[in-house]
Image (cartoon, rainbow, N blue to C red; front, side):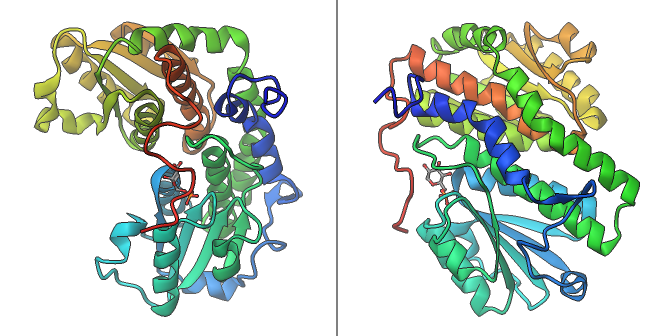
Length: 370
Ligand code: G6P
């Protein structure tokens, strides 16, 4: 069994460590002369892309959290409005779908019942559909009009890790490719972005060295003693803490909530009491100061703040109790790097609590019932 796990104690840890390769493999063959080229994957013409006036991301669970990042990526790079829905909601809310809607379904397995049903409904309503999936020959890969594969390799642990980061890579590829074809970004910006994308796998590798994972393991031992905690962030950091919170819930059974940092004061702040851990992710330059002021608010109410911030950042360090650093990249790409310590935190907390990491109670790897 350990041989299957490549010497790792659990599949989840193995899969966390496979992320540099999954990122590289998902990029492979899709960069030509320093620019993203998806002509081997997608049959969209320039005219097709020009026609889209809205994009919908639809998915469940972790893949939904990838879709939340997708909204920022497409809106910022291409300036087309994007909506993100969990699949089980999308189908029943009578969404506005037209032939100029691009519906992107994200699914590791390509078999999630709700996601498939939403894909079929979108097709029926006349949308163009694109599947981002990790399984060749899966239902999503067969039924979507266009397919962009993630090459994460088989994911065994119920809690998704390398599938998520690979989905983010696929989304960056899609956004940069659309920006290139539609001319919404200059070649110079696109080349710079592509370089940053290529660096990500090495940066993730650097985060997985023992000295770094040991620091998270010691944090996890503290976290493991609590029954409630909060995650806060703004913008892309908010989307990433939603994923961090889900990971922790799935495999540690600790109750946590992910909150938009600026929204805390509208209710949730009432739950902050002495000693409660608050995990604050602050990597987005444009809103770091705002997040810091929210950190100060929770600290004033006794929270124990664990800050996750960029390597060069000095301000965050001053306002938190402990700090974990994340390598710097373009703000849009930070989620790939910032999710890594949150995955590790969930993993080590689960281990510290003696939980079955790879097969948590009540959950399935792929949910094929609605
Ligand atoms: C299940 C898994 C999650 C996963 C979700 C969507 O709930 O436990 O880890 O994110 O399904 O799966 P999919 O295969 O569609 O990405």
